[in-house]
Length: 188
Image 1 (tube, helix red, strand yellow):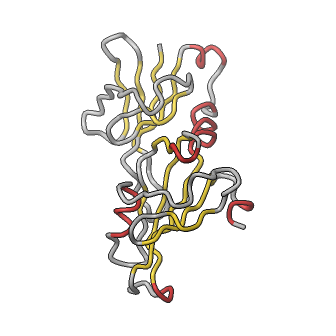
Image 2 (tube, one colour; image 1 turned 60 degrees about the horizontal axis):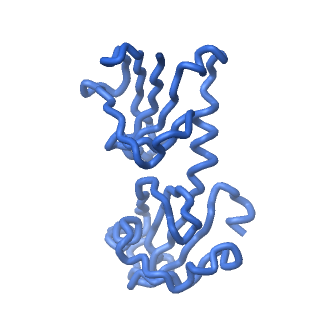
Image 3 (spheres, rainbow, N blue to C red; image 1 turned 135 degrees about the vertical axis):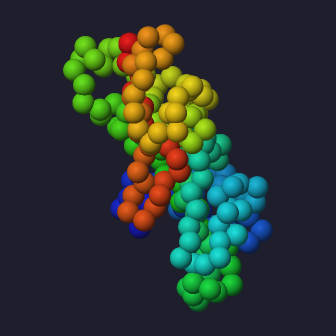
């Protein structure tokens, strides 16, 4: 039901405490997932280490081989006995957000004239300044950008190549502080 109602998710995985996927939402689309060992995945380990059922985790965007190599942002939470926030951990629920289409909408949706867009690159960067999404489609999940924030949350500067670079730390959402990502525009 969740996968039908929310098209932003590629799949939902229910894992046992050893990190084996024991059920998932799209076996017809991703037949190799059932039985997969995800015990080394950060999202699994972090969820297993949560102190309460009120806690959840999110992993950095990465490609998931089992989901046809799609870029995903994986959210996870421990599943606890009786639904009790302090109950014994029975396993982990991993929710794989379909990063590519959503991120593409963001970086290509920045309002600019055609002339501005032709000489600009809009970027989403993780806390290590790795390109998560780029309006030109280059460097995604590989390139590290030498973003010089000078310790500021937002600002602009001219780089060594004479381009204008504008940036802003993403604000998160409601009580979620975010992951230290930046939005940036590099313009010739």
